[in-house]
Amino acid sequence: MIIEPRVRGFICTTAHPVGCATNVREQIAYVLRQGAIPECPKRVAVVGCSTGYGLASRIVATFAGGADTIGVSMEREPSATKSGSAGWYNNRAFELEAGKIGRTAVTLEGDGFSNELKKTFIERVREKFGQLDMLVYSMAAPVRTDPDTGKTWRSAIKPLGAPVDIKTLNTETGEVFETTIAPASEDEATATVAVMGGDDWKRWIDQLADAGVLAPGFRTLNYTYIGSELTWPIYWNGTLGRAKVDLDRKAEAIRGRLGQDAARVVALKAVVTQASSAIPVVPLYGTVLFKVMKKLGLHEGCIEQIDRLFRTRLGKGVELDEAQRIRVDDWELSPEVQKEVLRRWPLLSTETLGELADLPEYKSQFLRLFGFGIDGVDYAQDVDPRVVT
Image (cartoon, rainbow, N blue to C red; front, side):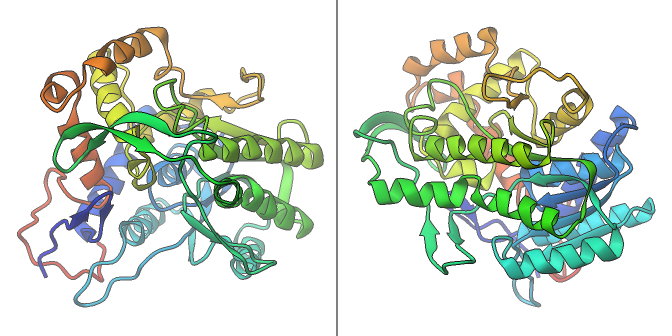
């Protein structure tokens, strides 16, 4: 079949197997050009491994660090007449490339929030790795079912306390417009913390520790975004921010059990992901940020950002912020970048978007998540959606 992108709002319902595999190999090639990271942990788990920062972490650990990895993600399998999820293709492509260099790559696809998958995960770690040296938690999901109570929580990305008037962008039409976002109820805020806070991360670590599969000196990372003052009304000062505070508390609790260097929240820069595309104001901020950072030679995608994290931020004595987080959003939040973004922001309109921002880059990066718009891929060619080569 011929697979074309079908975009509905911030979701693409199709993915291209050849494009996704090519995207994975391009990221691997970037990492290989940077050289080896000899001190990288050698037995690495990535929960949320199939796209974005999670996939980049697995690639850097394997192809720069020489690590064997086990990944967890929730995917949609393809059929003879329907494409699978981008993550399904990414996982298969990663496994193929890791196998070529003799590295173990185990992938479990299912509900990472469930106790059943955690149990299976522990069994596979014992079988293939013995113990783990590192776990990266990079899950992004709008819904979570508590495995103990059976209650299903649905996140709500809203401000707290009062409505917020904010400028936003329709990425399909290029229209810039003002919108008002109503504040979250206390129940919605609680649900967002349950989904996007640190509870599941801590459950993972506690169950792995109880099972005895964490090696001496084990470390875990959880990725977050803090952003600039332009995104704070809907992000850091809203329900998401409350969830991020919970993340910091859970990191402290893990450190209390496993040691002062055992758990870190890592603040990363704004990039195009399925999750970020759904947050009001973030796509518009991203289109401006990308243009400014590219002009200053500071722009990074997921693979560049995670490669820099592993090379420069994981050694002993790394600088931490006041909440004990590792910061790799320093280039985004640098005074020269933010000053220019803030200068452009009030000037943004539908008419000035092309001059002040980079919507084509944003759209291109969004489509690349699903394997589309990648140089060297013949999208007019018939492909079997069940096959990755």
